[in-house]
Amino acid sequence: MTDQLEQATDQKPRRAAPWEYAPAPEAKDIVTIRPRYGLFIGGRFVEPRSGRYFETVSPSTEQRLAQVAEAGKEDVDAAVKAARQAWEERWRNLPGRERAKYLYRIARALQDRSREFAVLESMDGGKPIKESRDVDLPLAAAHFFYYAGWADKLDYAFPGRVARPLGVAGQVIPWNFPLLMAAWKLAPALACGNTAVLKPAETTPLTALLLAQVIQEVDLPPGVVNIVTGAGETGAALVAHPGVDKVAFTGSTEVGKVIRRVVAGTGKRLTLELGGKAANIVFDDAPLDQAVEGVVNGIYFNQGHVCCAGSRLFVQESVFELLLEKLKERLQTLRVGDPLDKNTDVGAINSREQLEKIEELVGSGIEEGAEIYQPECVLPERGFWFRPTLFTGVSQSHRIAREEIFGPVLSILTFRTPDEALEKANNTPYGLSAGVWTEKGSRILWMTQRLRAGVVWANTFNRFDPSSPFGGYKESGFGREGGLHGLEPYLDFDRANGRRR
Ligand code: ADP
Image 1 (cartoon, protein in one colour):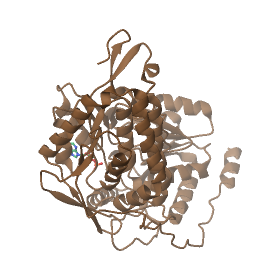
Image 2 (cartoon, rainbow, N blue to C red):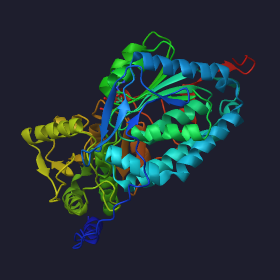
Image 3 (cartoon, rainbow, N blue to C red):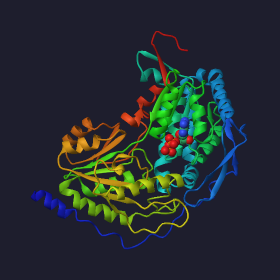
Image 4 (cartoon, rainbow, N blue to C red):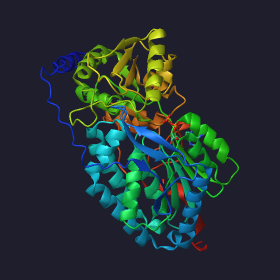
């Protein structure tokens, strides 16, 4: 107890900085946005047969950025046929070391043009440039590098078995990490010898279309990657297309369930990476200042727009008051605003629709009796914004503790014993990620063995690496992306004495 008190005194909250940063906006002129984008099919940008276009807007300014083609069924069909032809005539016959060269080229091009990609990502999606520059871009390039390394080593990856590609992968991705999710999908698919049709989210298509330009520049054989833009209907047409051998989806649990039904009985392979309601668990012996930073990184940076966001914080009762005080103080120092400003911590909410969902759920938290806290930051007048928010007095039955909010909204609950923390953390239909904060290694191991989550971070949060697999349990989906595990969903296996297709 004395130790605890001493520790508590040591960890007195620091005062918020009394000064402000001058604005430091990243220049936009590095980015050229075309007024109108076609579909990327067979190595070329083509007009959509549907004749339809939609607009993509900047969520931080509500300014229209470009018109983007909306692929109809015929367009999806053309893309799948181009992918099939490229697979049969070219890609599946290329030795792994040749496929690897293309992936290395893409990775290097992403590094060369990383500032351009990062600025475009922040313009189209609203995330702070700090995130797109320091997280999304390096990780996207690293993913291509990593899987380039596997392309000629599949026999070593799966000893005693002969790995062969599946064919055409149909891949549908969300708006929270637009380029990174494209990399997560395309890199392993191509490394394993598949071709792909990728559908980016309707609110964030621009970096995938810039990636299409990179793909042209590195001379990837036409049709190996095709990019069809559009909304849910386009995604549905892709998933249901009989020429697709493998479906990979990242998005909401609701749509994941629909896709699972559509794919059932077709023989298509499927991986789903769906929603989450991650628990961040802070024990009383944890380094509290680091934990506060981890919590902030887990839910406020990125506007809570990550499926692995640490949206439920479980704090051991004895340090609850202290941690809450520190957290509130930290929230006061978060800079919310222009995503292109290098000092911005919290950017714009991705779309009006998303903002409305957040407002509705936060409203339900207040109605159900939880206590809300928001810092006094000034929000820009135009665009979609939500103040970093935390709730105390939350009970497990509250909607804010159960449903995925996908916004910068934290629900704080308390516990007394590790068993109670575990039971509460696992009390969710999701199982994507979790975090444990404690000095004790044995407790970390005890917790990680029992937490029903695909990824558990210890004394950190939201760290990614292409070599470690990521994916969920329960309603968070199945299948893993990243690492050696991320190759398997894109391969079929014969025994070593079998024949390669
Ligand atoms: P979020 O809630 O993250 O926006 P969604 O699941 O709605 O997630 O969207 C993720 C991706 O799935 C987007 O690219 C979207 O266009 C696509 N999508 C939406 N509905 C369907 C569907 N019925 N079939 C296939 N893809 C879909």
